[in-house]
Length: 347
Ligand SMILES: NC(=O)c1ccc[n+]([C@@H]2O[C@H](COP(=O)([O-])OP(=O)(O)OC[C@H]3O[C@@H](n4cnc5c(N)ncnc54)[C@H](O)[C@@H]3O)[C@@H](O)[C@H]2O)c1
Image (spheres, rainbow, N blue to C red):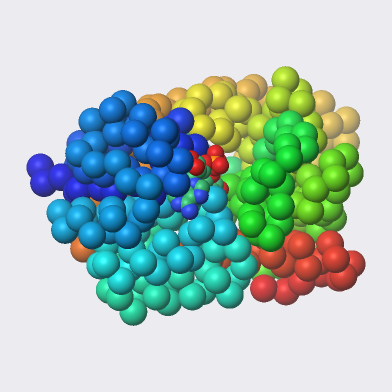
């Protein structure tokens, strides 16, 4: 099989933790070069993952002819100039979420990649989780009937860290909402096949004194009439985290715990109701029997790299495209506007 030759820009964070180990297992990928502004990170990744080159400047990496695709995993405020430089060098680009700091930046990123004729994919890798794929199939088969309500919850403990870029809205684009709710919204749209049309939200800071939000509680009306609720927090201890996805329909429900995260794991329970049931005033729930959903689990980051590589090899739209990432960022921005104005936002 032909292998796509990769360069990685910003290799010291999530790239080193997850994506590079995932790339090593991908059957259509070959790592050529890594780059980080911190030379220690660049050199360490070169050694660890067997890259040919380590750089501290993206221009040097982009000058390597054999590199066909770059994975950009730098802080969000670096994305736009790096995407523009990579697109000008005619490299296909897998960019971490959110694409840009603002909708305007992300629109420019999407437009520039189209103009330069390079593919743009986004790091919303949780779609590849085996359980999330199985949940999508369950919904598509109408096993849950008409979807009426969904919930996505993602939390962590993120106390003030001096100089931290993610806690600074000007350098991250947002906190709990832009960093975490974005995954839940993307996932539930992906699983249900419905798209957000109207948003109401509370978001801001309950606990920590930084400019990025430490909580975002978002209510979303979907185009199929269902309603999604997303709660994302930077102020819930990791030990208390539940990481829930819940989907309720007229014939059943799905409850996933611990599937939203960086490792394919967790547990999913499904309850399917007898569709001949009439109204039960006692609400006895006699027919309730939860069964565990079965799915083949793997490595989301491997599948992400393989999926983007296959889009290049087969000249197809990337499975998680730049347009997808822009759309979900617009939902989060609408939530921030709703929180600020106290008014529902129509998308
Ligand atoms: N999909 C996921 O699972 C996931 C998880 C975490 C983070 N992310 C995303 O990945 C991106 C990076 O987040 P992170 O948590 O890894 O951040 P991080 O701060 O932990 O790591 C960022 C790395 O980029 C380097 N860097 C800083 N400025 C740079 C520049 N100008 N050029 C190149 N490298 C530079 C830093 O030295 C560091 O090694 C963000 O967009 C974030 O939202 C995605």
